[in-house]
Length: 169
Image (cartoon, rainbow, N blue to C red):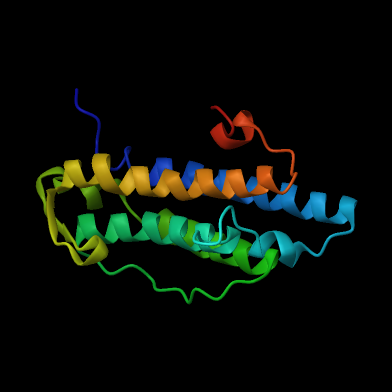
């Protein structure tokens, strides 16, 4: 029996967003224990040419909602990319989680064969829906989740593999 496009999208994005929520808890606790401004962690980056912690959250949430939008052809909510605090990042996660909660499983029926067109770096790429999900949307989403993880580790926050993997059912 084939796995549904719904099961390969919404629950996986929800799980990754829960991981990001856990990172915010750890960042907030760490900042408090070390007497740091939480905004310093939000602005932290691995390299000058990479997005900061906040940017990783913005791209992860965008990746989740845009994947659903591209697959279903229904517009996703748009968010400003202006978060500079942990509470603002929490609100962004909550809005993304609320949007994903509105997606019915049948909304993704048949999207594995839907044509998806994106233009990363100005280069137009045409995918079949399942190829888009497997080779772009999910890897892109998890890239940003893992970069948020790496930024916190780099800043001394105690996050490990189990924080990344999240809770198991």
